[in-house]
Length: 168
Image (cartoon, rainbow, N blue to C red; front, top):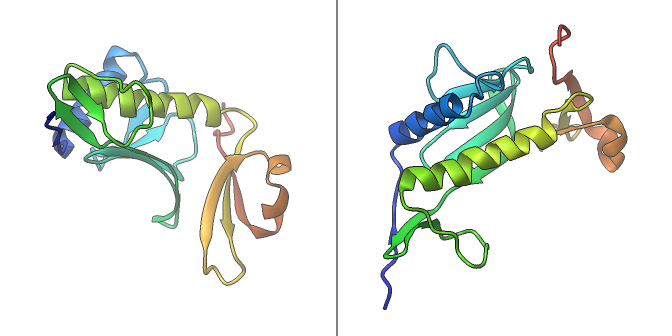
């Protein structure tokens, strides 16, 4: 019988690995750290209403309005587990299971590289951050897209925010 041990990642490890990943992959032209909060990052040259949160086992991209979370656009959750074959995410459906030799390697491959993949698909010129809401604000959500791709949601636009600063 194979023993699978669930592992919690300490927040300081996640932050250290994220910083190292940015440095080693030369991604400082894409990501910038908040000056007041070590665990918050932004996309360089992009509206500050998109925040990246480095937490224990996840990386979250959140749409922010008036200093509050309007919606979580992307949440990359890692359920780190270890057995004799190595480290893996037990929530991933990938078959065969992909094992890593270290928790750090798993975090970078699973969380950091997935964030970069999402960034390259979504944070592009032409896309706009749409804050959406029901008329009574009983529900709020956000989308990063173009207006022609909103289809049924067009009536729920609360605010449209260009992703990129005007100088870009």
